[in-house]
Amino acid sequence: MKVLVIILLIGLPFMVKAQDVYPPSYTLENCIDSALMEKYNKYIDTNKIQISFNKVTGIASFYSSKFNGLKTSSGELYRHKKYTAASNLFLIHSVVRVTNMRNGKSVLVRINDRMNPNMLKKGRVIDLSGVAAKKLSMTKKGEGIARVIIEAVDKSKLNPKNN
Image (tube, rainbow, N blue to C red; front, side, top):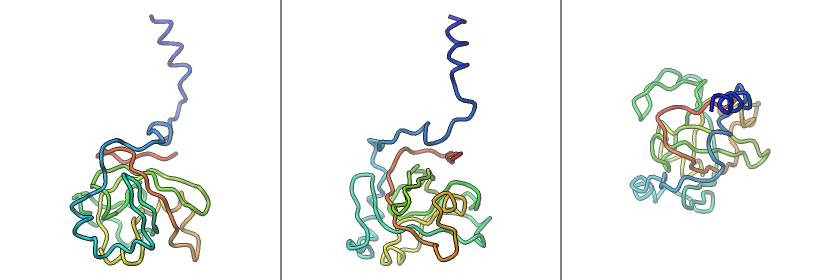
């Protein structure tokens, strides 16, 4: 038994990426916030936003660093260097995979805040932290928004670590 454990430990990578920990498929638990969907239905432009079970397609933007340290809807402080996001379509503490449709890059973030409902009229479905936006190559000059696919993966009160 001890030999088997040692072999298993040697075979593990030293650093585990969040992409390896969370499965590529959706969680079977509904992470779409149906109460908010009903409330904000009048704001949702179905020409710009597509919604299905635990999957949303639309436009992502990212927080300005001036919001660093302000309280979010979940009660925690916003941190520009944490993998978090704001969305009116997913439940608070949902972990979602955001994929930039232009370049195929993806990142895992935890929903911990809400957006202004008027953003839905513009097709905006998620507001990413600065570090998450950088991971998707959205922070270059003139590239502050991107068309994305958002897939619910899990629920957690811990932020994912994207290495």
